[in-house]
Amino acid sequence: MTTLPSLPARGLSTTGPLVSALGLGCMGMSGMYDGGDRAESIATIHAALDAGITLLDTGDFYGMGHNELLIAEALRTAPAGAREQALISVKFGALRDPDGGWGGYDGRPAAVKNFAAHSLQRLGTEHIDIYRIARVDPDVPIEETVGAIAELVQAGHVRHIGLSEAGAGTIRRAAATAPISDLQIEYSLISRGIEAEILPTVRELGIGVTAYGVLSRGLISGHFTRDRALGPTDFRAGSPRFQGDNLEHNLGLVESLRKIAEQKGVTVAQTAIAWVLSRGEDIVPLVGARRRDRLAEALGAVGVTLDADDLAAIERAVPAGAAAGDRYAAAQMAHLDSER
Figure 1: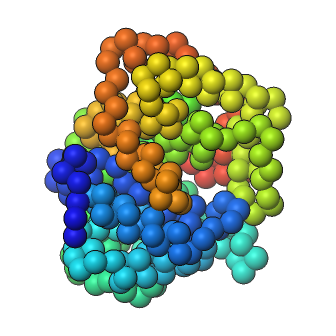
Figure 2: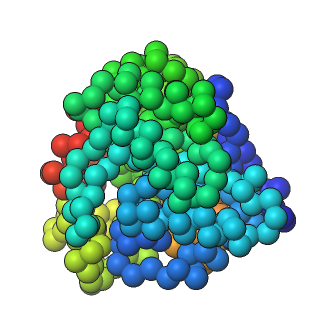
Figure 3: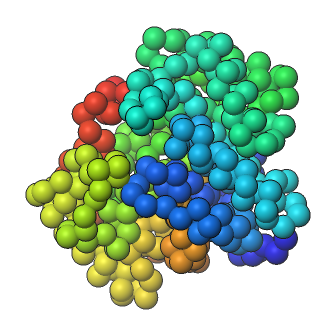
């Protein structure tokens, strides 16, 4: 398999695996946004692997298993060695109903092992590289959830334990239970809440960060327009940052960022991704590209260097806390241990 040597590696935690400096977030390929093209999704995964991306991120609840089956098909039809190259990160625990509704999260040890058994079958693999509960179950001590994953590690079904959207106290308790590879959490120019307490905590403990939402679900990609219609199955239709005056304000921030990008001869998306890359070697941005052209644009961010003047200009254009609206609707915000 041909890879691009220009895509560097970054380590997840002091004991975790080495992964490519960018990972591919596959959620958008399975119905969380409107539309979706199976053939293009598989071609995008193939292109990511060919470009040297090693980290594929999914959730067993993305399309109620559709995303895991899609990844399995992509790896099965990719050139030889794709499964050995790819590290698959799986989130579990979200409860869905047949109509696509949400029913909370289940972190009980028996449920953890049940979720894992189904993921292994759908993925067609003997192990999951990184396994994490999507949201901390408030009714189950994190020690029990992480302990169950640790048993899966011992049995050879999982290789590394991750966390998702966990707060500093929960991270400490989890790390005291078993080695933690990385914390997956939203981090972007307009979502910087981790900087106060969570980021210092994971760095103290030697835990890496896989940053999702680096383009804020397309909001700061430079491609989103105020007149874009969002269908009822697109979860951005209920996101506060995409509503009314909030959207107008946030797109104004994008235009300020566009001026900086144009001066450097790069795109808005590349600037936003490069900013996350600049935050530290322990942070791996996940790019949610659903198409090969968007993937190619994201890969270009790896070659963008932001010097002190660039970073200062970006900070003036999009200062911390500048975004209007919460990153999720109120009901979803209530599930975020990281926001408590």
